[in-house]
Length: 186
Image (cartoon, rainbow, N blue to C red; front, top):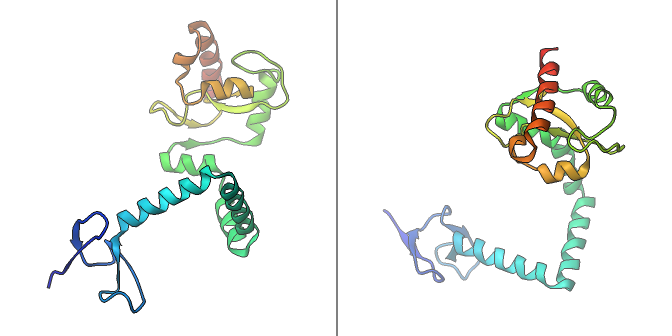
């Protein structure tokens, strides 16, 4: 028997299953399902959350709820599970890209570049590890000495996910690419 139910909000007829309607365990529902479909419920939740974020007082309440959650046992457990692997490694696994990068490699790279940004030449303590060919680009070979260069914060953020040919002058691109190809041969 194929039963259907009509959402009272969008008036779409859908199968009367928990896949399309949420469960409701109270005496007001004959079918045991909500009157709105899951899509309408999600949309309402998104709108209410956006409304809460736009109000300064509600925004403060939301931030406090986040802080309470982070300090709770459940929040600490979530943080422990997600911090076991670093974001880059997780993204690399998803992309099935090569991961062969150590702190020693980073120290050697900074030393080779004399603690300067590879793009602008600025000397700074807070150098970022920049993927020369970004992880988001299909040509990316992964995280290894032949694709990581030091970059100052400003250059790294400006470059973002752009291919270096789109970001750099041809001479600068050739200089950095040549240095990286020597690193790859090691």
